[in-house]
Length: 82
Image (cartoon, rainbow, N blue to C red; front, top):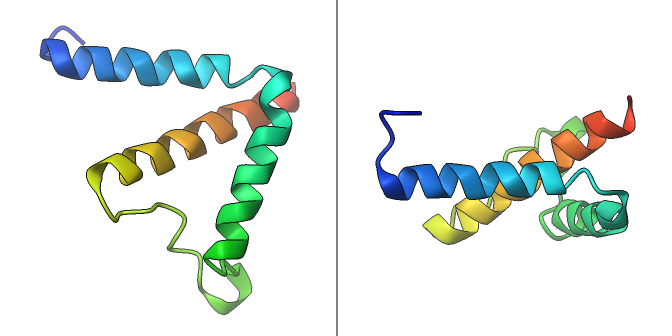
């Protein structure tokens, strides 16, 4: 962490805070809806091998937002199982 420059540190910290706040059950329906939308719009189907399009790599911003959503969703899911 001490080797991160100021901008990278703020980006990391912001992402980490959002991930922790994402464990709030008030956001559960939002995560489910967003993930279902991604799966539906991108025709993601593991059985047919079409599971590589979850991260939107159109721009750096969409890539960051897609990754952030998945990180938040994963931690939220893990929190549910506790």
